[in-house]
Length: 143
Image (tube, rainbow, N blue to C red; front, side):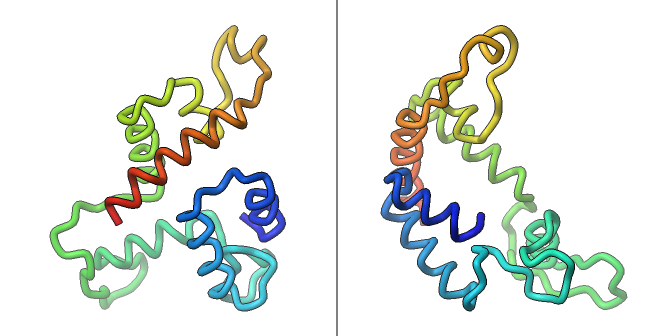
């Protein structure tokens, strides 16, 4: 997410206070870049690549592709996970707190399926904001 989208999120009121705190920290770490997740190396893209987070997570678990000497496992006994697992966890938690399925799917930026997706073009912006606010309250107790 670039800083333009971040600012739009903040102006619209669709970010929880916890999320705003995280964005402010990421803005500091972006070191003047217009992107929340800038590329740290020279590249054709000024923002990080699609596989960067998964590679970083894998490295934390003690595996780095193409390296003879592997890094140490910094995750201990935690079961391996990927970025997609975090999306699955988000979707599961939305269901646990009672968010209707179609709202939860839109929170993950999934399009509605079937006939509903063809005829229902509502964006559920307010409902998604409320769902993510509730999710933020739940995750805040876990962090």
